[in-house]
Length: 210
Image (cartoon, rainbow, N blue to C red):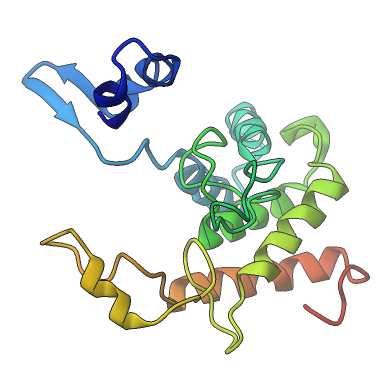
């Protein structure tokens, strides 16, 4: 809407048009809307982990192989341009909640996706496809380590970087505490589990930090 107000004929506005169906669409009972472009990476990671835990990979090998390819393709492989200027946390090596196009690194989504590809690396590539490259595993670990706050906790999108009083700027009436990022036990737990699993298979990488 901001791009449209600035110039309805601008390239910036036209580039947004292709992604409108991610957020607005018509169904059998009218217009539907969502504030986020899905949770595909998040859910696929847990589905992969469930298959691995229940020993059903061989039975559903083709499904797991496709899920594996999706997770590999969904990893963010570069940082946002001018990330320092825009005060963005690093995104290279991470997974977003939905897909790589989203671009916003999420700590627990990255951790759960890393766990998924590490579990699949234990299974024959004839069944689940080729493992993700070692360099991309290292990028994921680097990203997870960058999420850890000074007190050992982990927040969602970025490290703690300001004070709670900044919430006076929150424009939302029904959702509190969204201006700053805060640590959560589930994010901290996911990151720790992923680092432990990574260390089992790659004990020589960033030994001290892990």
